[in-house]
Amino acid sequence: MERRKLAESFFSQLDEIEDDDDKLKLAEKTFNDVIDRFWMTNYIVRTDDGITHCGLCGNNGVIHSKCFTPRGNKIDQKFFCICPNGQALKKLRRDPTQCYCPTEKDFKKES
Ligand SMILES: [Zn+2]
Image (cartoon, rainbow, N blue to C red; front, side, top):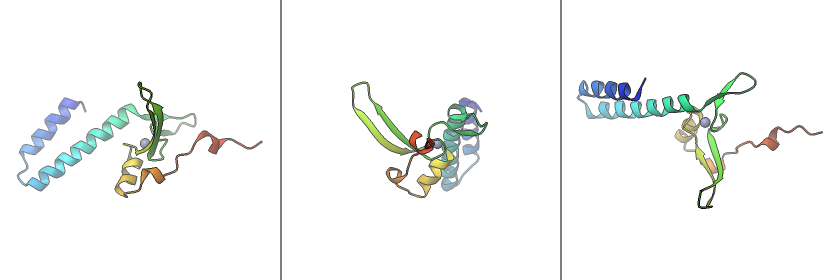
């Protein structure tokens, strides 16, 4: 659904609701729908084995970002992903810094 249609749907439904708690629930659901759609549109990848994965976290639920800003500031931090696995971990109130993110070394075969 396009953004405008999603917004129109939200306001249309909002007009029909009188209870404030129900309005907040609708707003929260719409917000989550927007994030889910954004994730599905931009970050789902199909790997060589034909299985779809989250392109941000590899289905681990945590993104370990290691990069530099244009000014040279180092970023080395873990975040919950916006995918369903990341949001589930967030709801469990896990600490993303304590979550292990596999690296290429984990999958190299010993020779
Ligand atoms: Zn993810």
